[in-house]
Length: 504
Image 1: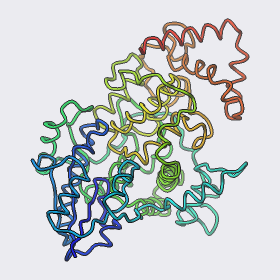
Image 2: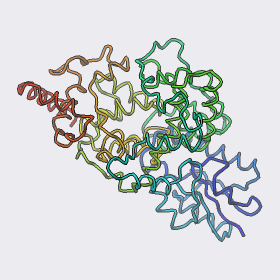
Image 3: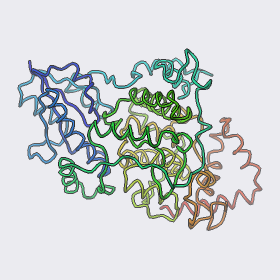
Image 4: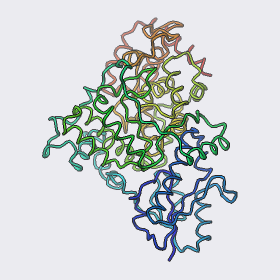
């Protein structure tokens, strides 16, 4: 009996449950490049090229492993433009009796694929969806705590990573306090491993340039890994060159060094080219061998088995309506400069320009610059979510949406984060070199040259004072605002309103 096994662009893993359930002798693997997946948001051109090239290389890997692959290219004249359409065409083409697939990573696709495929669980994660929901529901009580830190400790015990018996290595679970150093000098910092496009990738780049010329972002130079071998080499390079200093430098930002000590492999991990547990074991081994400090090893492992697994659990637990939450009632349209980088704010210009050119920015650039600005300015969180989903190569909705709605914009009212991640320009000044030479004065709180982050910070505190009054982590800032002289509060409010008026 012939069955069709669709493999999606973020399922490029030989261990995929549908492949494990398949039969190389009789089943057909379907891989289809469809316009709907490139355009439901207008994805960065580099992101589209990465996914398509990685898909084509994975198809070759599958053929080498003995699978028969039915591959439909984007420019195939018969291409229907949708996964459903291509699955139906493949079923007819091969006279198949059944379609089996691994569950997709997004609600949008899950709701569609349930209508035409028998779905198997995606077991490439450490925490299954149902188990996370049971854990979260069981902690929805006073003092129960659904925070990431509680979940992270559970994952440490489950995996045994950085554990000494039942105790955490180093006698503490979290070394984040050691990972907040201001920016180092750029001299001597490593660069991520880069790969020259091969003939397959070059063909994809030509196709993307032709089909998606108006999408955001620069297509070239293109240097991403597109095969499993390349992705593993890029990660091995990170272990040797960057992991030792990753921890202390992970929150820093430099204009002339975009990557610092970050791994820049999240896109490969989210596509399925890397195994999260294998990565974490390798990082642990670097620490146990004495080659990296524990704060670097723990900080990286926490991002993978803690934060990454946690936000996926939140995504599936909360359901498709989570994207619509807007607890702070933010409704300002996304400013034009998120697409152009054309702004006098040096930090925003640097992060957006980097995003346009690289399809990459690290987590603090996203959270504390572009995300912080949107939070302070009252930008519609759904509009910001769609921007993040479109512009970053590693952005898939299951990981991007909770980070935006819950962590960055506090739009879920505190389900995910314990406080709004709002900060004035002082934070950016401390953690970056962006403020050097900026049009605005980061030390000025009011007036035309005052840093917009300073103006908007107090505007944010003022307009949400009642909502935040019961949050103990915001109490000091609320008291500070209340203790300002009335005329100072009025001036800060007027200056912030004047700046917001320039956003349209």
